[in-house]
Image 1 (tube, helix red, strand yellow):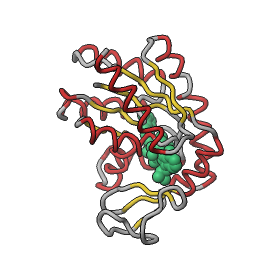
Image 2 (tube, rainbow, N blue to C red):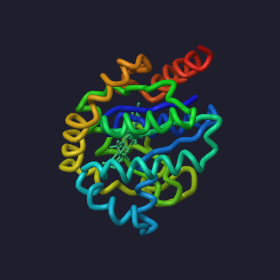
Image 3 (tube, rainbow, N blue to C red):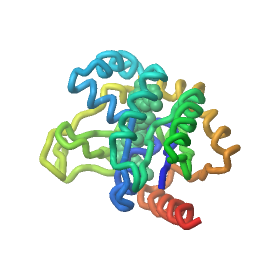
Image 4 (cartoon, rainbow, N blue to C red):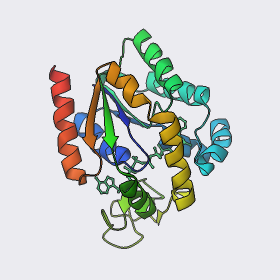
Amino acid sequence: MRMVFLGPPGAGKGTQAVMLSERMGILHLSTGDILRENVKRGTEIGKKAKSYMDKGELVPDDMVIEMMLDTIKSGDKEKGFILDGFPRTLYQARKIDAELEKLGLPIDMVTYFKTSTDTVISRLTGRRLCKNCGANYHIKNMPPKKEGVCDKCGGELYRRKDDSEETIKKRLGVYNSQTEELIGYYREKDILKELSGDSDADVVYEELFVNSHFQRRG
Ligand code: AP5
């Protein structure tokens, strides 16, 4: 099963991708996570990407496409994968579709997390992540047992630099102007499934699992 998760920042794509990829035994490939890892390690990609990410702008298309293709080719891709936050422009979508066709690995399903702006802002301003293992929390919706401390590994929780209100607004603007048009692109290909990203995480998860199960059998 090869899937794309599409939706505004804070729609819950990463939260769901972690759970579904574990349950289905497939790869979770998040452009945001891979880019942040590169920034942390100080690689060439990381150095180039950092200023775009801090401002809430998209990293240049060709750089992201090459990085994701390399990641797909080098991973255990046969069982399947979830592309989380990629593609994000029409150019990225057309290019990755063509490359995946060549590899005999076309996308089976695109899930669009339709989510309101109010939800997105409250989710992102309350998001906290573990510095050590990357686990994802929300100060109200999914709080850790002990404030500021990761339940899984005891690591320190932090707030992403691009989760400030100003940068969230910028990211939403970028999503509306450059990414939203992918909904129509995938709808025309007849592989788009839409769900409400505003719902509780377990409700979203059940719908997602049922959709992917039927898509796989079909
Ligand atoms: P990226 O890391 O991909 O950020 P994003 O798309 O803005 O998405 P987020 O990670 O913010 O949100 P999410 O939908 O995963 O939500 P989450 O599950 O965490 O990208 C960062 C930057 O990298 C970009 O700005 C850009 O610069 C660059 N980049 C990345 N991809 C690129 C590309 N393809 N091309 C060019 N540049 C690229 O949930 C949010 C919060 O809500 C959490 O706290 C969570 O606990 C909580 N939550 C989740 N679901 C629920 C629920 N159902 N109910 C209640 N709370 C919930």
